[in-house]
Length: 326
Ligand code: 8YV
Image (tube, rainbow, N blue to C red; front, side, top):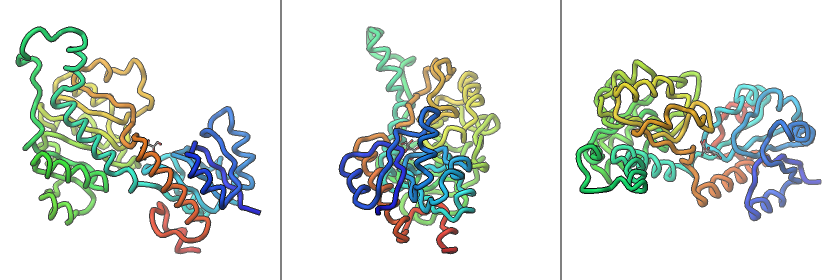
């Protein structure tokens, strides 16, 4: 008999088939109040769990006594109780490699859209406001040759640095827990503390995962340190930015604008002040949302689950401590 797994995200037919070669698949469209009890019942037999994000918490894990591997089709794992998974010796695997370039492309898009007011001006043209040559009130600010500060020099940070360095000739500062020799050699990036980065950068690009250490890392004090012509880009996890402090900084002209893909609460509330600020570009958490990349993320998650359940994990284990124990 094939081992049972619970799948809680839709997959393309070929990937579904790949799973079915190995497992008996019990499928759900997400986990929600409506199907919770049925998911919990299916988990009683499940050896594997595959979906995108969580919450995968203690309550759910209590219903999954046979679980041996969890795989998420996402880079982020902030909605998983990693400590609880680790305590139970269950490996969690994520899929960060598949989305790096796609997210980095969008970060550059947000920089351009905010600095050159692409959405704002396009909306004005569509509203029939274009009567004569653009005058100063429609001017934006340059991207090329401006200083880019990257907070969090992981895979995506590196891909953003590459684009900014080679494509836009931007000097690059970065703040990360440790020095990144590769970024320094390839993109002439300079490691600095967060205050220096905030003070010297024209673009402050925050691409950090969410953790107790990164929650509200960028707030009132940090916005006060940024240039009044500075632009904040946020494309990692929303709660890394104190959103109320961001709104205040934008309303008071403490910074020039913000290009956002992620928010403290998603979907963004319809009455959020961010929606009425002209110098804010608001995308609906679509950093990785191209058909190809979402497929690649799913494919990586499928292979990761197969690797986990066959005791063959090579990479992408979020809690590798459990492997040493085995
Ligand atoms: C998507 C992301 O939100 O991978 C992540 O951590 O934030 C995004 O790529 C997610 O994968 C939704 O399917």
